Amino acid sequence: MNILITGITGFVGSHLAEYILSLKEKHEIYGVCRWRSQRENLANIYNQVNLLEADLVDLGSLIRTLQKVKPQVIFHLAAQSYVLSSFNSPMQSLFVNAIGTQNLLEAIRISEMDPVVHICSSSEVYGQVTKDELPIKENCPFRPASPYAVSKVAEDMIAYQYWVSHKVRTIRTRMFTHTGPRRGDVFALSFFSKQVAAAELGLKKAVIQVGNLNSVRTFCDVRDTVRAYWILVNKCQPGEVYNIGGNRTATIKEALDILLTFSKLKFEIKVDQALLRPSDVTLQVPCIEKFQKETGWKPEIPLEVTLKDMLEYWRKELKTCPWKANTVVK
Image (cartoon, rainbow, N blue to C red; front, side, top):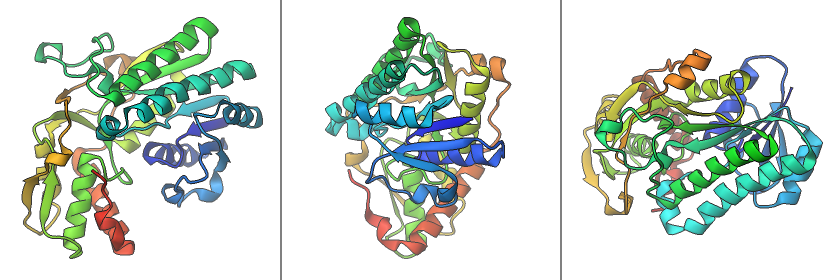
């Protein structure tokens, strides 16, 4: 089977490619990337995937890619995925996430192909919910609280419209908080892990810069996430939408406290105003019953293992590339 992954060089895309290859089912994996996309996340599988240059904002490049690959399954994971950045560059987030998805689905329609298309929306579309709305179900109203969330509402609805209007076989997911090794350092738990590793290596002081530690999240390991995505395209129905998330709910502070138990150093915790969002979503606890009933999937990797593996990743990364200790843009 020919499989196309947009965003293959990213965090989730690279883990998904690794997982599919680990199945040893002889699928041919193609990935869309730009000429300047970093390839380091694919270091372990670089010779086992086929990278094709294309861009979500270039319809012609997507049509040419589809005609070459003729995929049976498409995982659309490419996006501007950093909420805080979307406040600084709202149009870029809308253009990549909404227009980019429109271009991909239009390319499928024009090419007259019939793949199953996983569209990765986000739990951010629900915005700030009330306690009586927990756990969050798929019919919870949209209350997007950031340009990123708005772009994901648009992506979500575009995918639904292409199923209704053109029978493009889209299946949408609203993934809740997921993390793990190779997560970008602009995301909280990865940023904390990087700071711990940097301090252990003597690259910075034993101070952890943080944003809002009171936000409540339900955490899922990326390796459980990609396993869910693979089950999704094999078992779920086009036109449907599914919440996917972990089974461990905690505040960001509680997760940070667990992370710090894996280090012998004592850290000072310091709030950095630049890491606070103009409007924040502080309560994200998913109801994943719909997806579990249809697939039998359940998260398996404990948060402690996720955090330990993420810290170990940054220890190795900064030991090899110490200059990365100070690369976060705020």
